[in-house]
Every structure is written in C-alpha cells, then in structure tokens.
Length: 335
Image (cartoon, rainbow, N blue to C red):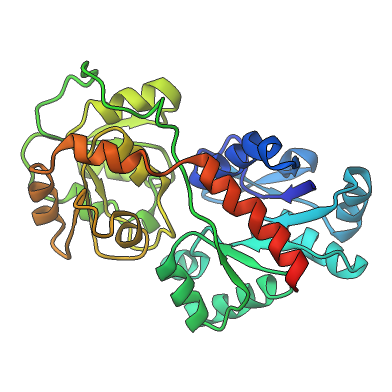
C-alpha cells in the first residue's frame, strides 16, 4: 500500500489530528504500507482569520490532480474537510479515484459557536463531503451513533493511542504551584468551554497548557490561573506528571488524545459525561464524569494514580495503526 494522506491539519498546529497522522506514518511499515502526506506546506496559503496558526491553502482540483500524479498512490485518505481535503475530494471524483475519509472535528458545533449558521446546514455539507468515499473513520462508539443519526453511512472505527514511554508517572514535580494542581491541555479557544473549568472554585492551582485565540482575554479574566503556553515532548510530559487531576471541560471533542496522555501519566480525569470522555473513561474507574464539573474534579482526587496508569497503557499507537490500515484495506475490498 502506498497511501496518500491529504490533510489541512499540519505543523505548526499542535493537535490530536496531527499527532494521530504522524503516528500512523511511523507505524506504517509494520503493516506493509508507505505513507505520503499532502499538506498546506505544498501550496500557497493564508492564515485563517482569528486563528493564524491554521493555514488555509489556495489550491484547486487541478493542482491536486498534479499532486496525485506525482505521488502515484495506491490508496487515498482524506483526513480533513478544509481546502486541501476539499480539493482532493473533487480531484478524486473527477478521476474516479476511490478514497476514504476520517471525521476528527465537530465543525458544525464550532461554526455554530462563532456564527448563526445552524448545525443542520453544516452537517448536510459534511455528509456530502464524506459520503463520496469508501468509508468514514470515527474514533468512538458514541460519535458513530451520533453521526449515523445525522445520516452518515459506511462508518468504521479508528481508536487512538499514546506514547507510554513519554507520558508516564514521574517522581519530580516541575510546577512550582500550590497543590492540588488541576490541569487542562489543549487549544485555548471558545469551543473548548474553558471557562467551565477556570470559573470553578477549587483548592490549589489551575494550570492551562496550550495556546489559541481566547488566551489573552482568559488570562485577563482569570489571573489566578497559570497559563504556560504550548508545550510538547518532555516539557509537556513533566507537567502532566506534576499535576493531580486532568480537567476536560470540552463538550464537543470527538475523542481527546489528551485524556489518554493524562491517564498514562497517572492522572485521573474530571469531565462532563459527553462523547469523548464517556467513551475513553467508560467503566474504568479512572475518572469522574458529572454535569457538576467542580464535584467531578474534587472527587477525582481520590482515584489512585496507578489505576490510571494501568488503564492508559491499554491505548497503543500500534493498535490504532492496525485499525487504520485494516479499515482502508477492508473498505476498498468490500465496497
């Protein structure tokens, strides 16, 4: 298999989509596959208004057709619904090239949070985008049920993994902060519902890792919280291991790789009982899901760290990659 992955999500973005795709490429040789990426780096692009770290590519189906010819893939996977993904979908349609897709982001909810566009309109557009492919991959059972309710078909499951050698419990605490430390990691944007966390009356310290368009005004509104900006690798892993509870206030994430990074680091999770946390935490006993996020955060303090670590170790990138490449082969063979 020579797989071409078309994606709008790429460096310098730091998010679950980019990490997932990078790990799929790293694991590809184990499954007899070679991965080639087609990203915004290939084309002229402009920064997205209000979110400049996201680049919007200036590319049409003609330029994408040339990229297809150069790559010579046996299979095509469209990872995102942005300009690169849309141009690739149009090019595949014109050439009769089969493809698969994946659903990573709740764009209808994000768009509705920023505009007056109804969610139903966005879901209709996304359904047209994805249903031209052989299959659409989603990360959790509850997301599969939700999208099926919106009329999506040919859905296949693709879970996520974590680097358990990097994200692990550690003895040293690098944060000079009053305990307990309640941690959030992710984009700092309106759709992440961060105020539901930052407004809580909690003991100790609230720490936010990440950046985004809402950071400035949130820092001003919640000066008692610690905003550390974007961290990666060892720096990020040490902050996880220096915290006590991972608080995940999002109501719209489709999975939340940060959840399993936290678990692998020995952190219990406090979250709302919604898609993502409900699927990842399940009946593991490694988190507290409640409509009262403060109650969940305080109750999570009593959860043993070794239980969280053991559960986090069950999520591997190798199993994630096995599902991913198996889905592609099965979709092309059966449909």
